[in-house]
Image (tube, rainbow, N blue to C red; front, side, top):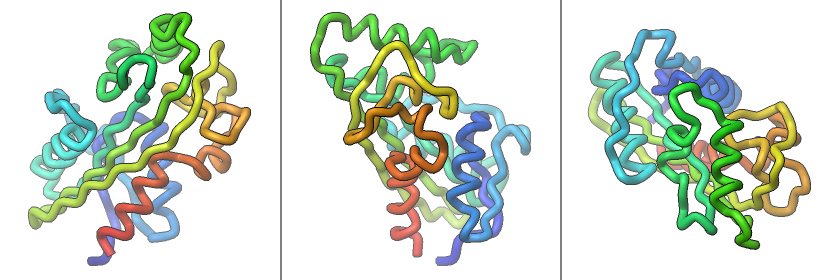
Length: 194
């Protein structure tokens, strides 16, 4: 199957839209953000990244009748039993205050010496003909505090991928891309769909 020329990305996060547009550029695929087509955000009611990604992609596909891609991603902290996990965005509250969310993660870890964590991204592509593709990408790393760098979003300023002394937000787009959980999921998706 060839990728369609346009895909709706079921997110209102401008950072994600930009990241996916960069990944799809070599394939001549135009990414359209959910906000650009007036898509409402569905309530994420599933208990896994896979379930929520599929829920969002199916919802967008039902409304637009276009190929729709959704990503559900988050930070999984070992010392917190995997939290915030699927609730990563919700920890930032309605105002999407990730400074507050990062502080909460750090405060909850407390004196625990285990600062290991992983970023998880699950991509779900739902086609108007009913075909569905789901793939997962992960990157291991360590958390630091206070946050460092201004070239990322979400929890990027506190996450250092394995083997790096800089956070995702310090590494910038090209540096982050080398390790990115979304990039890993994207590569898996391209292999699956071809």
